[in-house]
Length: 255
Length: 87
Image 1 (cartoon, rainbow over the protein chains, first blue to last red):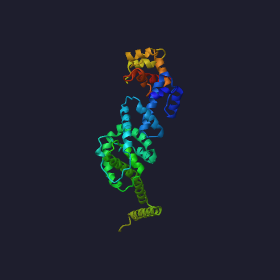
Image 2: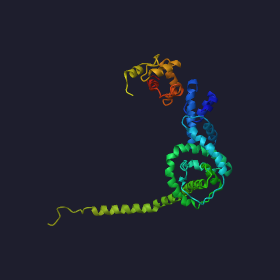
Image 3: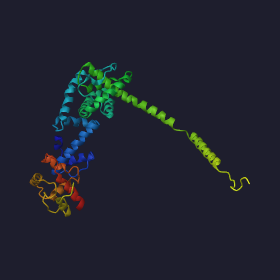
Image 4: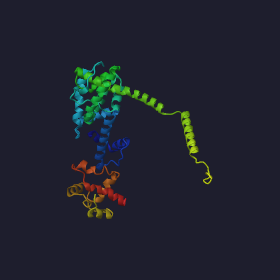
């Protein structure tokens, strides 16, 4: 947040306008408030989706003292970076373990968007991935600590499917970036979580296909609908016809 | 918040030049700190509220940021309501 002190009032106003934050004039008494607002907005934005621009700002934040305790989280990924590069390599997809091997929280449970954005980038940019992932890892660590444990069960369920999925080299090295240790279990669990991520992606097209098929089966074709309608009309007609009382004069019975 | 007499008195007339302690919920300590910073009349505090574009969520945080590290001053809910009546 100290970075905002360098910006002039007009620059702050421009930022507020860019983020669509409703604001008033940035004057001496209001400046601090709006700096705080921008800071909160950027923190939130970083947590939800990792755009490229936030990578730089997130590094800035990691250097600042923040009262929320995020600074501890941000320091951790930096140490991880050094280890990550040592352990960087290409892991096979052959082995699958549950991801409980770590005491450290793993980003098994972050949002889908997070994973997607990570995998789209080529191998050459893994450094940038790690930058972004680490920030998200740290931020998601905060948020997902409770969610990650139940996610592990799901991951193990998906792992059997993932056996047969080819894993690109880039994604495997990417996944190594998630986990700090350089032991073989790291690559395996990372590949397992990568495979869980992969299976998640793979399953989506499968979901669409059966959904589409079911949709077709439930729809009755137009001619069928017309036939049904005619049958209904005929049934109603017969009921009405046979329900009619005979027009017999009550006086004409047996004389 | 239940309408106390002080609350009703404050709302009954235009803010005018009432002292900053006149809205209900303005304790002594925040009053003093406000006066030290030049907010000696309630209308000046109201002015700060207006500068913040009448943002009711942001306005109570304004003292929190600078000098009052404790909870927001409850009396700072008054200017929004004063605005409703007279603006």
